[in-house]
Length: 398
Ligand SMILES: *Cc1c(COP(=O)(O)O)cnc(C)c1O
Image 1: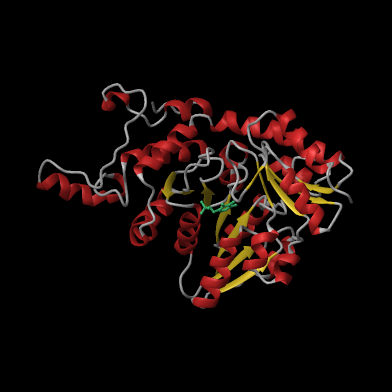
Image 2: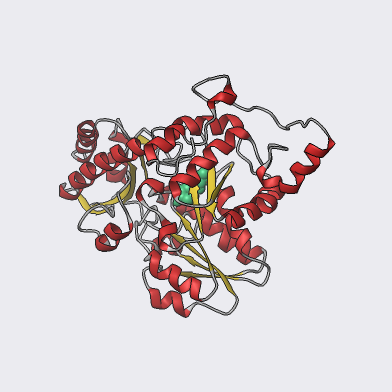
C-alpha cells in the first residue's frame, strides 16, 4: 500500500507490507536469512550496482527490517530510515557520518549520558576531535561557539532528565547558513509528537528501545534523514561497524509500531494526570515536565511539540536519603529500573548511576542529585498510578 495521502494509523497498519508475497499471511514472516540468492550472474552483478536498494546480505538490508524502516521514514516525514542494534549504535553512526578528523562539533550539554560520553570521552579525549558543549537554551552562546570548521550541531529536545528544550527552527536556520549538519535525538517525543524535519533538521536519531518498540523487550535504534545521507550511513557506518538489527527484533518492532500512536496518546493522558498530581502534592518541590504550564519553556514546547510523552522528573522536598529511599522502596506499581517508554511504569534515581560514571560537579551542574526522581508513566490505569505515588509519598517526612 503506497498511497501518498494515508494518515499515520493507516501507515502503521499497512504501509510497506506486501501480503501477496507472504502467501496472504496478515503478519509478515520473519525473514531469518543472512543472505539472498540470485538466479544468475547478471542479477547479482546488477544488485551490487545499487547495494542500498537490494537484499544481498543482512548486515546491510533485510526484508523484515526494511518494512519498519519504510514505515518509520514515512511517519517521520524523512526520506529514508535505517535501523541499528541500539540507540547508541544509531547515534554514534550518525555523528561519525557528519564529521572527519578536522571537524569541530557543538553539542547540548545535558544530552543522554552515553551520547555525552561518546562525544566527550571518545571523540574528544581519545580521537582528538574538537567538541564544545553549550546550554542549548542560549542561542547567542551557541552562535559564539561556531567556527569555520564546525561540521555538526547535536541536539536533544526535550532532554531526558532535566527536560529543557532547544529552539529547533532557530538553531537549524543558523546551522544551514553556516553549512553545518544538525542531528536531533527525538526519542522522548517520537515522530507522533515532534517532526524535526519540518523545522529544518538534517538527521533524526531514536532509541527504539523506548516508545518506538514500547514493550521493553527489544534494544534498538534508528537514524532518519535524506536518501543521500542514509545511503552513505548504510554503506559506511552500518556496513563497517556492523551494528545491524536482527530480523526477529524488527518483527517485534513491527508489532509495536501498529499501536505507536494510540500508545503515545495514552502515555500523554496518563502523564499529564500524574504530573498535575505531583505538582500539587506537598512532599514534591518541583515537577520537570514540558506539558505543565509551569515549565519555563512551555510556550516553546507548545510550538514545537504536538503532544507530551510519559517521561518526567521531579524533586522531593527532602534531601534526606533515608526518606528518599523510603519513597522509592514503597512504590508497588512503579517498578525500579533504568530505561523508559515501555507499557510499564518505572521509577529511577539518575544520581545512583551518574555518581559512579561522572564527576560530582558535572552531574551536579545538571541539577541532578539524589532528590531528583525520574518516572516513566506507563499504560496502566492513571488512578492506580496516582494512588501508588500517593501512598509512597505519604510515608516520608519532609
Ligand atoms: C536510551 C536512550 C538512548 C540510547 O538508546 P539505547 O537503545 O539504550 O542504546 C539515546 N537517547 C536517549 C534520550 C535515551 O533515553
